[in-house]
Length: 401
Image 1 (cartoon, rainbow, N blue to C red):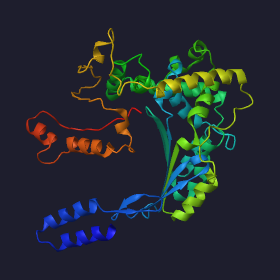
Image 2: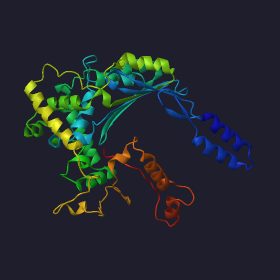
Image 3: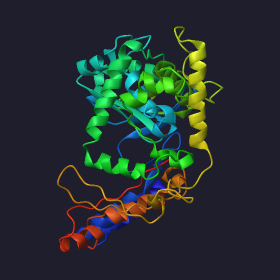
Image 4: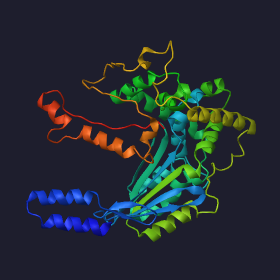
């Protein structure tokens, strides 16, 4: 395959036409791929090298050797299924709250701010985000400190984070402050309004409508008591249920050879075993009342079952009599902005499985959104701009599951 692509590019090089030669070569090279070990496909123009690794408990890892990353290194972890829509309706925002709490020390590195201090000492940065279906974590540091920070990072997922009470109130305040900022952000407000159009419908894809950020009212002691649970056991139960090793995907990028990166990942995250079916988080801490944990586990399991229940293909489908008018398609939603802005958005509900890259039709969705957002001659953007009707056009797909 590679030989045939290179031959096609060589033919394009020899063809007359000036700039057309470059365009022809670009088109040919766009479709040229090389299989790496582990089934990774890369462009022949890509100087990076890739390797897929299977680690302990089924953790999937992608090692990347980037010759240009000589001075920096980065790692990212995606936990599939641990997203806002799988949090209990009685404690909405729990997934996001757990994201915050994981940073607050582990049994191996118990300092509350230890992780972020190590990042700062190595001129790095870190962050995390909770989406509807996943929670993602990443950090980037100077290459010389990568191994040390990676070991601290790993404790969130295959170690024993403290989720300590001493940090709980402070992080609830942090979550509440984040929610306050979101409420004066026009993009966030529009999303909230759209979610509210399916408010109260929390089965299957409709669980996308859950309030994902959380705040003191939804995550505090009163909300937990009303649900018959305690907050810390609920955090532990949620982590045990959704932070399964076979739901984790790790990416490591540095200039190190792939063999060295594989050895590093194996040493820190564990070597693969014959049992790669995955497992939950480490055992419940001794200071947690077993009865309180059991009650929280039942609540979390009920939320998981609701999220996975068979339901309509998208949040606004299958509306019965008496539902919100906005639940009848098509509908128009008008939102008054905080800032001076004028935007028009068209949303087309699609089966949620189309957002999964494993679906055979997913590339078609990517292609369509790319065409709609194209800004070249004859594009939608060019036409609207020529009429003085638009200053920008964008398109994309948001997965619900």
